[in-house]
Image 1 (cartoon, helix red, strand yellow):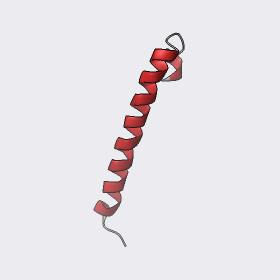
Image 2 (tube, rainbow, N blue to C red):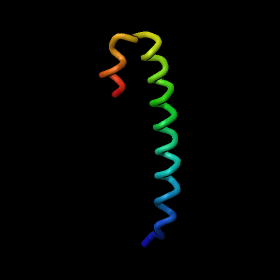
Image 3 (cartoon, helix red, strand yellow):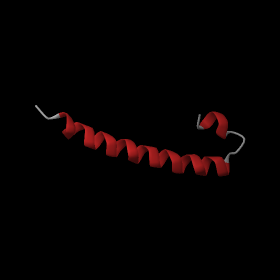
Image 4 (cartoon, rainbow, N blue to C red):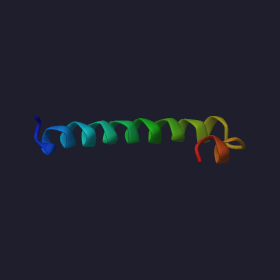
Length: 42
């Protein structure tokens, strides 16, 4: 049985990675589709 920390660290790293990707995608979408961004990235 793995300790909780063994699962927590990859989850935090994965969450940070996904958040970074979403923020970059959101910036690109806001630049390309400003009129759609309000429901596209909500």
